[in-house]
Length: 289
Image 1 (cartoon, rainbow, N blue to C red):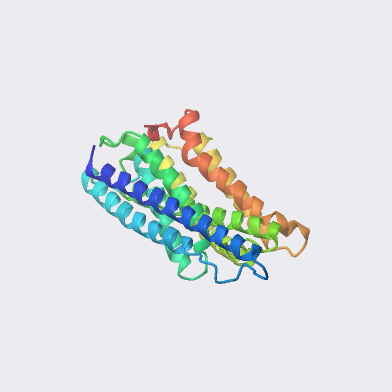
Image 2: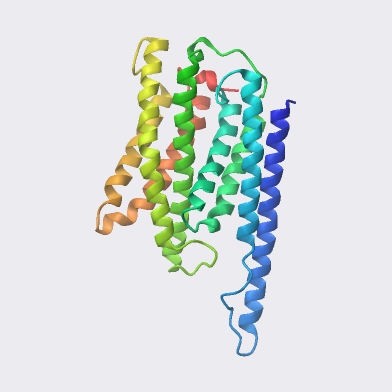
């Protein structure tokens, strides 16, 4: 087991531990609020402890630092950008998700989404650990260091930002249904703004990644487009997010579909990331473990 893989396991432990601690604190806060409300003349006051958000947030930052170290070590070991196979891509995906959260959290009150972000990052780290971590020479199609860095790196970045959009869309749907009554979560308006900003950033990056992929495909396979499963999945995901941008700009009943389109778009991201390469044979099958 390599040192980078050991760091992945440490990052997973940090995520799971902080999520468990946050869950315990949230349960304690809920019980305390219920007791206050049940007391004669009592109410669940606004100052009921909500430290679970701080604990979850801290765990995400610790895991981000550990994952960053793992990616640096993997880069040194391989001599190229650390996303040439599903082991590396999954680890980078997790790190970028946490990094995106850390950046957006500085501009919007979204710590209430930290548990969902942590669950997604933990799942990605589990996938990274499930795949073989051996260092193999790059297959001929991947022997383009600049395109490997930029094209795949852009895809990782777009996927991570779309994960943040997904978390915000889930938060919006929950708060919209509850009338912003779920304490600890950002308001529906905040979630909507964060989700929209995330898609506005992710969409052009995804567009660039697809365009660069076409250039690389022509260099490797002498064709800009070959109806490869991953190409088709990426194009379908791009269309869904494009539909979201159209619907989100409307001021009628169709606008209520916007968060659902983000959810659908992220499902497309997940299928493009792992399903298209694992379950279908195509030019991207070299990404299999």
